[in-house]
Length: 172
Image 1 (cartoon, helix red, strand yellow):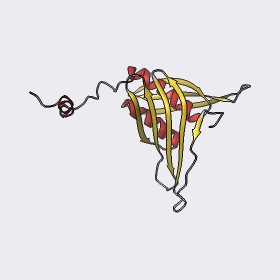
Image 2 (tube, helix red, strand yellow; image 1 turned 30 degrees about the vertical axis):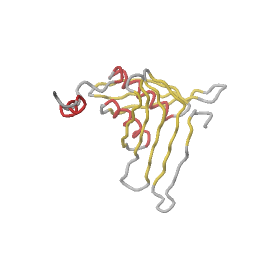
Image 3 (tube, one colour; image 1 turned 60 degrees about the vertical axis):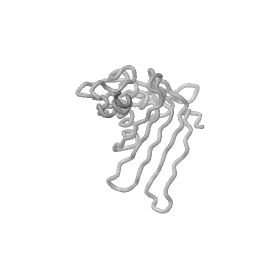
Image 4 (cartoon, rainbow, N blue to C red; image 1 turned 120 degrees about the vertical axis):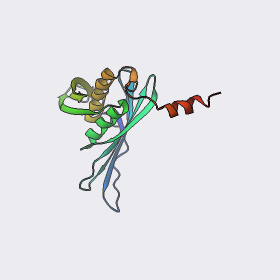
């Protein structure tokens, strides 16, 4: 366990044959943001030109239970933030991200200020963590939770009638 961040990195694994991928996988000491708990982050990067990293973010919600999002981005952090937005069913563009180091007698902490544009509106949030990625994801969770309260998917996303019929069973 990384004492500074509270994360359990499984390390970077490089495909020795092709040397084309690097994988970062963190089992995170649970971090709360509203009704959400961040539990795992996985980022798969490639060194091939024209390929983007892929991230998977695992969350636990008080009502929805375990959910995860998978997305790509121009970098590992972008992919992780896109994965959080995917969980909420929203397209979110990070328009500003600033970090500030908070030195203290204990291990240093990172303050992340985040401004995100969702459906034409700007939203801001801050979070503190021992790791930039964890703090940024926590800030994104705060933004998305304020837009889509109770952890529910947006009301514009509804199950299709065939799916509802399958869940309800055959009509008698």
